[in-house]
Image (cartoon, rainbow, N blue to C red; front, top):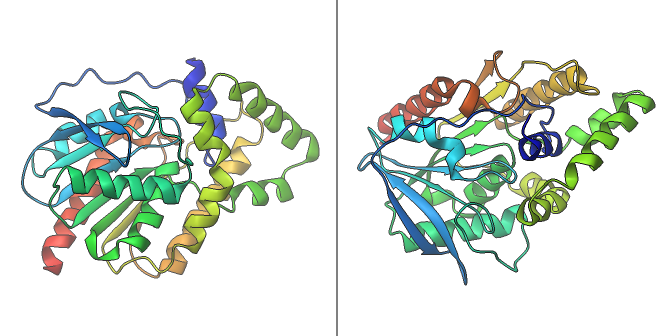
Length: 283
């Protein structure tokens, strides 16, 4: 099992995911650019043209390559943009906070400097869900649709601690503490800002009236302390989020725990296609 992926998997709020997912060697026509994100440069991978510009936001400590399987297909019908946040992949470090609001502002700057056509269909995994929510609230007129891929929920940790037996909670905490040391500095900074990011995402309301889909990985890992309860709690919180939203589509993916874009890329591709089709009907 890859230690970096394990560390990230147990640190994100929908943690306890599958073991290391081998990256696809898929190759597709694309352009790599270094673009200013507000005082530092990030690596962005652009592929495709036309359609609704589709932007990918990765999870905690993850680079743009997490989207390879999905971007390769979606780029056949739209301009797609995947990028590495500050300090990750081919991007420079930033001294700014690694909270969701800062990352949303940086993403907006990146898209402006790339001269990417508006509006945007935003696709976010895990921590990327926080960034999507904040971005959509700040720049609502620039958003055409949202696809949440097993997003973090700011209530998960408190809900788990209230329900989990103390010994199980302690075992889970110990596993997380052990994993922290394997993270890159950039990933540690994102993890350290998770509570602030969750608060910012909670305050980012209402979301714009655009097509929305949420995918939840429901596969369980009984070997990780408290994971069955965690997966059940995550699903309940995702249901509550969609109920509060009052619209959109919630899709369950029983063959994935958390990294749906790697385990079941076709599920993510279909969700994007459904939102792309819905945006065409709204025009």
